[in-house]
Length: 253
Image 1 (tube, rainbow, N blue to C red):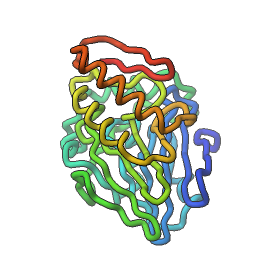
Image 2: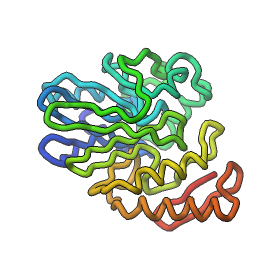
Image 3: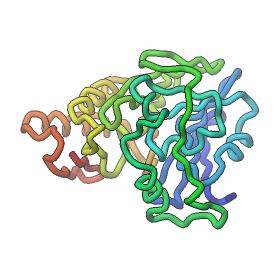
Image 4: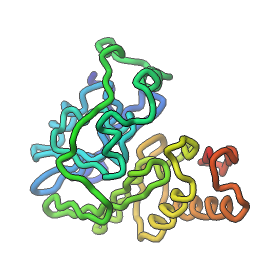
């Protein structure tokens, strides 16, 4: 358990909680304010993330997922105070478009599981959020403010989180170094481009993705925007057009 999570400090009030023993290499982010803390994504649910978080903050914690996929809400069961986007409420109430057995296959794929984890006990989190988000809200943590940006494309209710004072952009699955997923029926390649247009216009100092390499610079936002613009111009920004490789990232449509 103790070696499942890797903790890195961004600054004295912001932490990365990573799960490198799974191929998804997920990253969750804890933002501590003077009044409360915000946990962006809660990981895979293989180990208890709340045990780690309790060592990093003594404030009340609100959990918020960039989107309602299994690898982002695994620890939501430990946080009764959680927010979700209106477009994915059905996924928290029995309407997720993939069966539980398929999700379980994802959980155990390419992973060294802890001895005390039993896949037969795994459940896809369901629940009612304490606040429904639409995009455009600001979350006050006390001394720091986090803006909610609705960025559909990878998922209908996908959100990025932007802290103006630091220039931190938490991008979830919209932006990361690896193969971006935009081929599931619930994805929307054209909305993906619009979301990249939105975040690439921000004066970003640092990009924090939900997966894989943390060595990622803000300029990637511009490169991804250009690539998606080119795909649209060439009539390829649609499901089934293929996988396109751009060196340190790719996209599967």
